[in-house]
Length: 345
Image 1 (cartoon, rainbow, N blue to C red):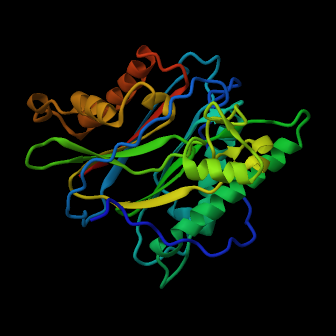
Image 2 (tube, one colour; image 1 turned 90 degrees about the vertical axis):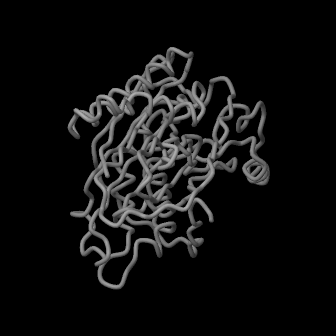
């Protein structure tokens, strides 16, 4: 059985719709994607096991940590929205919860990451199907593709109007939660991983929920070359470390695109958390190491029996910050942004 189903390919994209706003900014100015050592991260996918999908809507709690690393400024941004249902009216009858979590790894400045963190989820909700007889599953891939395209166009228009023009870009890793279904959209080299526990052994299986986009990958390199660009030293034109992004207007003519990969994964009774993080973390930790580090902070059974739910939340919050600190201690030169979405059964 597959870890997650591929969603159907969308039909031809229609004309885009307008944008909106939301919080969570950081600032910055020195590029992590454009001038850093090449270190392609590897996707780790644990063995998938059949698990029962949760029946009731599980509660979610997000924890975030950001570190500048060795960069002069922090260029990353993130979005945490527990409830988007007010923007999504009338909702399909079979959905009661809509939440959104995202990490944006900026480069060449913080403006693209900040812009995406404020607008992408609003552009996405505007595209989602509404009313009776509609299903999120049916068109969510097309909705994500349209929303990424619209957000990119809006930012590039604003960037081009500046003097001098902004050259900022950003990756985008998003998780849309509709009831107990996760829809993961990724653009660039940030990563989403799920911690799924084996109920018998109480050991974690690490599931990779996203696909990375690096110019060293065959299909990505071929697209760049067909567009008239080239890949040198593992980078587009020897400069840009990712092959898909928002912003980066000067690289769009070279085959750098704004089309995300979109995956779906239902939450099961065995799932503990989803980890979203930029590549700064995964230059210091493997996916397995990161999951085990978090679990080591929250799985002290001797004290858990005496604690309430709030204490477990504090453990996850502490684990998030300790993981970011440890990544910097291990020499992560890039900005490090970590977002843990705790699944509260």
